[in-house]
Amino acid sequence: MQSWQSHPVPRLAGTPRPLRLYDTATREIRPTAPGATATMYVCGITPYDATHLGHAATYLAFDLVHRQWLDNGHAVHYVQNVTDVDDPLLERADRDQTDWLVLAMRETALFREDMEALRVLPPRDYIGAVEAVPEITEVVAKLLADGIAYRVNDDYPDVYYAHEAIGTFGSVSHYDEPTMRALFAERGGDPDRPGKRHPLDALLWRVARPGEPSWDGELGSGRPGWHVECSVIALNRLGMGFDVQGGGSDLIFPHHEFSAAHAEALTGQHPFARHYVHAGMIGLDGEKMSKSRGNLVFVSRLRGDGVDPMAVRLALLSAHYRTDRTWTEDLLDAGEDRLARWRSAVSLPAGPDAADTVARLRTHLADDLDTPKALLAVDAWTTEALTAGGHDHAAPQLVRTAVDALLGIAW
Ligand code: 5CA
Ligand code: ZN
Image (cartoon, rainbow, N blue to C red; front, side, top):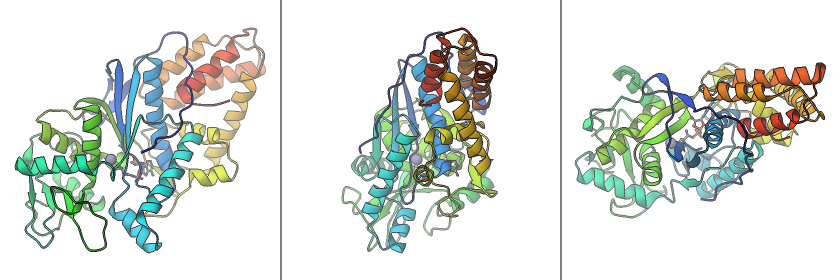
């Protein structure tokens, strides 16, 4: 699939700091340890509705990871998927009497525009589930051949993953079985499907039902399950042991647990990813912002209303990426005020020395993306520049470059 346009990222002088991130699997903040090319897979959208601020916040967090690695001199191989065929997408297309494929293409196009407006660096590989069906089919067939997957004995002999196949199941989320069962039922799983060997076994291949899109191949006519899509798209481009698997915290279980388990069962290697990184949930009026709840604030709507995407960026980065938080008008107002102050300060002919500000910015961001402290460091410099002033003629440009490179703000 076509990705979106990149903006050039300026190089920043001085000393970068190696990035440390919280890892859900080991439950601690650990250094990332990428090679010359850092590798990251972030779960993409299910394109049946426009990008809301929850999605945006999650992709912004991983954009900062991307920028930290670039600052440290790494190339970054970033892969993202699009879940462009799935039950909720088909249900929405049905409800709206529209072609599911056209709906997916339309919402994916809008997502690309939103990401570009927010200056999120694009993935190198942007891969739709539909285009990946042949490679996914191959993996499911191998899991079947290896006895790790099985078909239910039914009119529709769907293929399931026997989740007890490997001993590492549970090592991403560490949830106990009752929690797993509850989340599995809540997030797209089918614990009560008759014929499964265990309620927690996850769907790998859904045999074609009348009226549903399907693909023919060695498994017969059907379509892939959700977790195995991400598993295969990541594995075939990044290999086992890639640096970061990312998404919102609603993906910890079952999605990331099973994506990892499928790949580990297939290859016999552990781990799938070296860090599992999860962003907190953005809510509105006390509830998680979600398409199914309908309580959404769309990035495109704000853009249409003339809101500067850079203010949205600052508003979403003003709290730590791992905290669940609520979107409010006040947050956006604060983002707009901050952006205006910063813009005034970097437009001055001179300001106070900024070397220490840049060092603090780097230190805070490298510390599990501590954006609240990073933003305060820039605030401190701008306040001094706008009140006391300064004589360093290079300082405003240095702050511009640092905030552009590390926080993705355009002036
Ligand atoms: N297509 C799957 C992943 S393979 C999916 O979860 N799609 S999504 O459109 O529902 O979400 C896209 C990304 O945004 C995921 O990383 C998800 O965890 C994240 N996300 C969804 N809702 C929120 C929210 N309210 N706050 C923060 N992140 C969210
Ligand atoms: Zn995914």
